Length: 158
Image (cartoon, rainbow, N blue to C red):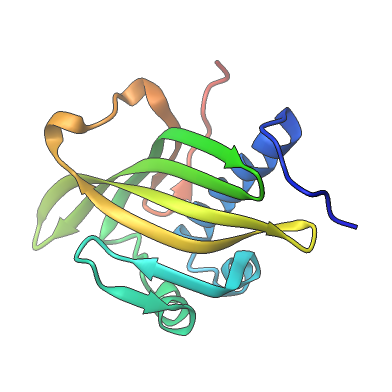
């Protein structure tokens, strides 16, 4: 039997941090099977343009979305997780440097992944991405993880 609701216990927060790390790792490694396993059947994605993608369209894109020769730097920073009953909001910002035509362009997007706790597991029911203006970039001291050319970098213990 599943509990009536979840709380912001250390165990729950660690589980959601691990899901956030898995979500990003799945993206960087184009791991559709692992990503599919954490998505709710009713999943929807909302892009910065306002475009909505259903689960099938999103997973098809996921298979080839990250190219380490184009995306030379990717980090996750400013992680904020809130649990309200059986819903969790997992928010972070990504800094990304893309190489195009010999030029590197850096920018940031922030995302909110909404998880539902159902059948004793957290499943992502919605992912929404928003562009971040430079004046709102989170500081480097909030970095959680870094990928360089698709490879996770070891971080020094704090």
